[in-house]
Amino acid sequence: MSEPASRPARDGDAAAPTIQTVQRAALILDAFTPAKPYLSLNEITQRLGASKATAHRYTKALRAAKLLRYDERSALFSLGPQVLTLGAAARAGLPIVSAAEPFMERLLHQVDETVVLSVWDGESPIVVRSVDNTDRVIRISVRVGSRLDPVQSAQGRVFCAWLRPEEVAGLPRALKRDPELRAEIDAVRAAGVSVNVPAVNGVRTLAAPVFQGPSLVGAVAIVGTTASIDPDVHSPMAAALVQTAKEISAHLGTEDPTPAG
Image 1: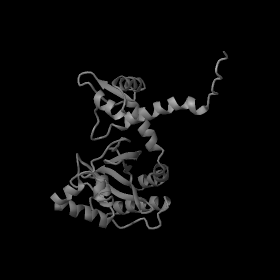
Image 2 (image 1 turned 90 degrees about the vertical axis):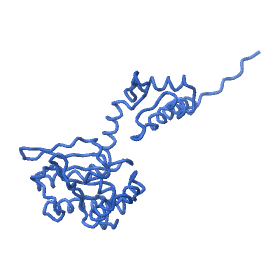
Image 3 (image 1 turned 30 degrees about the horizontal axis):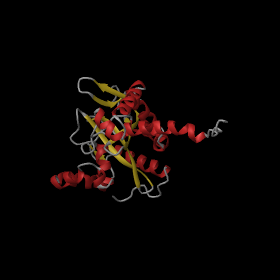
Image 4 (image 1 turned 120 degrees about the vertical axis):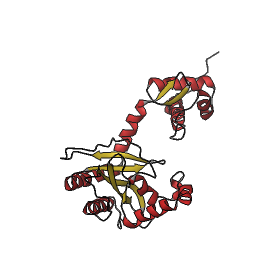
């Protein structure tokens, strides 16, 4: 009896297991959020929709790649340090970063203060570019990847002013509970610039919105000390910041870089 003819291998057949592996790894990593930074093996297994043995095998591989870390005392997993490296690389590749950089450099030389660019990551503003090569004796440095308070920081209030309230976790409730916060956010929208008053630890920040078309895509900010930055939103420094934000927006294709909130 002759052996049955073997079916020719297709490229798709060889790729299928690899695709499934990538999809499962992505499912695990995507399960971690700012609100849920720690997960148990049972939670990961449930997310994966596979056996506990399969989930264990995947978490072991992700730990080897430094994409996951495991705390033996709590028996919980969290994202590993390699995720921070990948996140920084992804943020550095955002179109707004390369578009804004020359304008940020020019503003730094104009005001001699640190200039920072932040974007909204779904939970809060996160710093994607910081230019701090000032001539000042006291230099304020802001770490790229820093997560900022969505309500208390100057950049955060820019996003509160121009995003829909439901896009900022807890904002609708906060606005109902705190009339002063609502008034401050309205003032930010009217002035086109935000300032963190009172300043925190002697640091003062001015921030202005950057648009692409009708959408808010970032906030550019000047960061310095209370001695060097005037809190007046109509000061020359604030005017220079607003002008820079408008120019970045225009470069990104916004015909009217000051849309209404």
